[in-house]
Image (cartoon, rainbow, N blue to C red; front, side):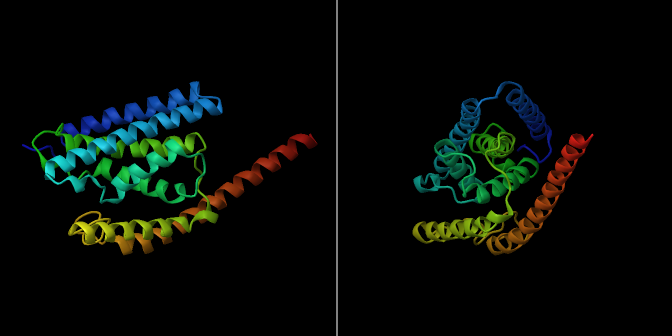
Length: 239
């Protein structure tokens, strides 16, 4: 029988992944101190992500007997490839992160808990399946470490890069659909989760609205904490 959602293979994978995430974050917290060490740590994770997504796309191309399906045609696949390259060859706080980070977090979380591709083979270790799980896992881990090492911080000022990024992904999707005559790509022609309204235009509009709400709240809490810190410092000085 194929692996089931929340079957023993899926639950075992989630348990091992949780241990790996906690161990990685603790190791970084205790042993990664200098800027050089931080850069090495985050680029190693980005490099592993790049290997995972390339392996996944090659396995899909072999499965489909179609070389051009090596090109990612989903938000998660394209984000894994893009974010890995930006982190590997870029630096902290790039504008692109203000789109890719949010897609990476949501895509990674959704796929960890709802991997709709588990049933494509009887084995959980089938290469397109396990490499799909791994690249989503590493994508989520990379987004967490980016925050831990201050490579990315949410910013209301940069919210516009999210809708811009969705538009770029949509144009890319239309391009590969037209060139290769594919039925769907980048949530065009099919939803992110089958049977839902999570298509490209809903993600563009709904995602932008939700992001603005999140960023307003984030900036409000951040300002409150900053003012509290200043007041505490002033009170300590006056004593």
